Amino acid sequence: MPFFACLTLHPAFKISLSFFHPAMSSSSLSPAPMDPNERRLLALEEIDNAKFGWYHIRAVAIAGIGFFTDAYDIFAINVVSVCLGYVYYRDVTHKATLPSHLDEALKVGTSAGAVFGQLFFGWLSDRYGRRKIYGFELIIIIFATVATALSGGGPAFHAVGAIIFWRLLLGIGIGGDYPQSAIITSEFASTRHRGRMMAAVFSMQGLGIVAGAIVFLISVLGFKHSIKADELLYPFPTSGAAGNVGLPSVDKIWRLVIGIGAIPAVIALYFRLTIPETPRYTIDIEKNIEAGKKTTRDFLNGIGHADTEAVTLEDHVDEIPSASTRDFFRHFMQWKHGKVLLGTAFSWFFLDIAFYGLGLNNSIVLQAIGYAGQHDVYLNLRNIAVGNIILNLVGSLPGYWVSVAFIDTIGRKPIQIGGFAILTTLFLVLGCAYWPLHDQESKAGFIALFVMAQFFFNFGPNTTTFVVPGEVFPTRYRSTAHGISAASGKTGAIMAQVIFSPLANRGGKNQWLNHILQIFAAFMFLGFLSSFLIPETNGKTLEELSGENQRRFIPMERQADSPASSGSIAQLVDLPKVS
Image 1 (cartoon, helix red, strand yellow):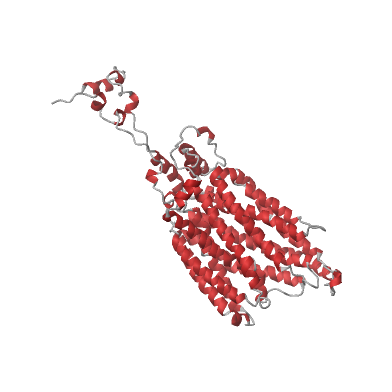
Image 2: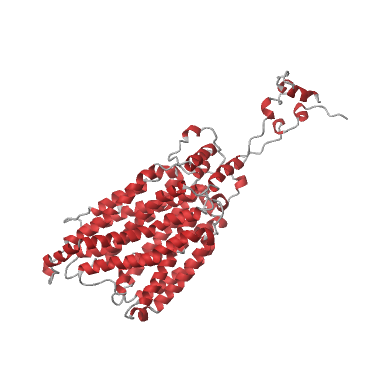
């Protein structure tokens, strides 16, 4: 046996090999440290491959309750705007209808606030962390919702003006919920179930819309006798001198409907404030692999707030790319990355022109098909509520849940492209055949096509435009880019309200609605084209989808060949060659 091997193996010789050569310390014989890139991928692999469990359901529920509240508050304005007409504009001039400029301001205010909230909270979440920011948007929503329900007016400030202000603030909170809920869900999800989890969060929007209509219907039914009594006590004015004669019972109804919207947000607040930081943010932004591994284990074990401070100093990897304005533009100026952001932003923009153009004006569509507009206040409010429930239960809600069922099977891109193609066709038919369908006594054809459009909005681009931006960008810009995409969508919603809604009444009430539907068909076709810029994300990890080389994600300094890097004892001792 070689002499040096004997020295290392015989128990009597507990001597350091550094006696023979300075490089031959005991530490030099230990295994070389694992490449940080490998350690990072192994840490992320644990959550990517996790089996679906109650901890995933908890994450979906925490994010989803917020979306339930968002949709409830956004779309409740459909029925609230009708109520405000009966309360503040029941006079000869306005005929119990909210003036069009105020109706637009109510609906645009929330979307305008959402644009700011999506951009600002998207950036904040990347800058300061998902956990540190998550929950503040709900605080804004709760405060603005309660303030809206308690709004009043005076000689210097009309009540509707106060409501518009609080709706603007509400929009900021709602906007902040979009990027944060999407990113937290995607970063906690396993690869296999990520699409289904994100779609389930977004599907809570459908439940929120239906819940708002149901609460309104129950309120109207509960105040039935009060409404009828008020109509007798406060008859509709017959002359302009009488001014506004509002109905107190209807005033109570809209305040009750809005106020109830704060309840689910209050329930969700505690859980959002105690949710742990996502492993990906801990590893890629806080640059701490060991803390990320601990966060993963704590999440999978059901521990709410992981204590990462204990390991903060152990395993920093400073070479991980950091977010900066310069790096942001460097990254997205590359066509392979920039085209994805363009695809997510423009497809969401084109979608929301039609989705919010119709969704925020369901009462107009219901009037056009004879399901609203009755002179009897109680019947009008009841039918608007029932009509909204029917349209959403039959069309919207099934579309959301079919997306949840098939998004990880069919894939995001086919659902989005197919949805846009079908919507283009449906809006063309609705627009071109509007008057023949409208003039039918039953209007069954129009209702059937409209319900189909609602279905394919949600089993289509309305779901996927939310899901895809939460998957395709690197961790350091994931929330910011999702916020940019979502803000593009809300810009489309504003455009729909400001430009297209007033056009519907050109030439008379709802006389131009057929042309609006044709214009929506053109935007759906543009959405179809822009969808080809996005990649298919099904079955791929977030790291694969980022488009960055994960094997060289952490750049390693080039090390010169050193004695410590060699495995040969003869080389370590630098023995002379035997000729």
